[in-house]
Length: 381
Image 1 (tube, rainbow, N blue to C red):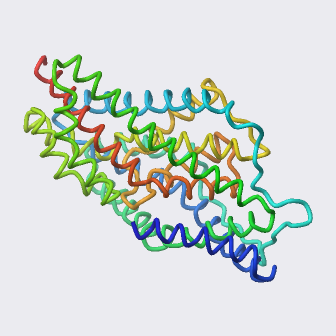
Image 2 (spheres, rainbow, N blue to C red):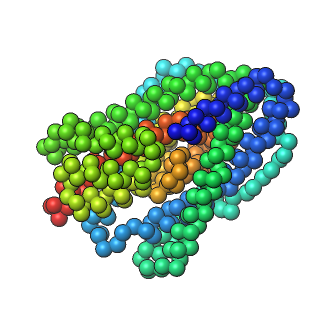
Image 3 (cartoon, rainbow, N blue to C red):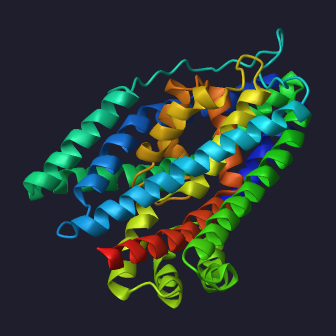
């Protein structure tokens, strides 16, 4: 929660700097933003490479039927959540007339003192393909030494995120809002922020209602009872902002819903890393909102967003455990598939982090439904 407070402080600080301080100080803050932005761009392929390779290589072996069912249900839930979100957002877009620009107006452009470029080691799709090849190879050939390499690479990137990039995000976002203050577009942007955040949280609740009511009817269980048993996990996730930290509570909740112990012990920890329906809802909502804000991007249709949603369910596998890990994993797709520039990326990060706890809570509560269905089909097997 301290990260959210720092995020708010960064937004307010950036606005004050842009409005009241000399242009030289604004450009100094903007320079810091440029440096952090270059570091983020450099790190994106490494996040995809090491986290996905490590996640695939670490999938449990010897439980093929449970593994296939859990992965299938988790990925299906994530994709359906993303598709429904695109449809809902597109349905409400006509209520927003016109686009609100967030780029600096001509004559008010903020410049960086340092033109620093840190090219990534590889492209996003190259990193993704490499991660799958090595992840599957390590798992199938039982290459323990190579698994140690990708695990340690993941630990290095995780530490970089936790110790450098995540703490630097308030400065990064402050630079963006200072630029918007100079351009005179900050008020309209902030007014849109509140609408987007409320919309994302409401869609989380709608998705969970659909999951639990539908599952309750099909499994002949009381949806109210199922939800009541999962509420401790929901509120724990809001407080911790971490699916992994909520696993003990999620396990107890799933077992209280009648999931067999061996099924719960397998599916709940696995879903904590591969089931991100709440994060997908948030990322899709925020991405489309940022595209609505941008004067240079058009809000895409479902057909245009579908490839992004399908890829999003893959790149978020074993997303970094730090707050905002899911959006950090998704930045590569936002830039390569949706054409996000640096300012759009900063707005996306700010929007996502502002409600990260609710997205995590949606992920965790959805895990309980996945466990119920894996339990049902494992009984048939």
